[in-house]
Amino acid sequence: MFDVASTLGILRFVPVGLVSTSRPLRWLARVGQPLLAARYLAGYRRRRVIPTERLDYYQVAAGLRQLVRAGESRRRSAGAPPGGLDASPFAARLLAHARRVTGLHAALPRPA
Image (cartoon, rainbow, N blue to C red):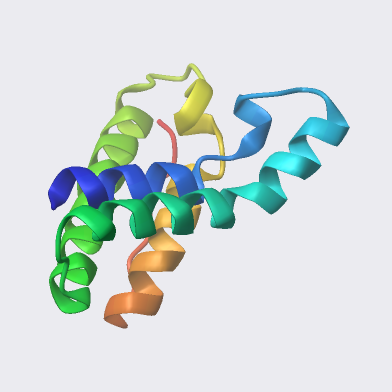
């Protein structure tokens, strides 16, 4: 279940600009992200029962794990800007999702 939740987080929140620099492809990917995530989950649910409340728990757990990694990466950057995924809006999107699901408010550390 944790793997399913992690995959959903990637499908939903990784910025499409990390995958493509082509403007039409970015637009198509942005539109397709929610559909891809929904199809992935529907396909998984055809094979196994996943209670929504358990999936919600694991989505928050997976998101928090990814947020901790992003926060630690920001702290370790030692003056150099974080790269790739950590420099993207990915962590901010995960944090916003965690706030919506849990009602808890937190902030990511600023890069060192």
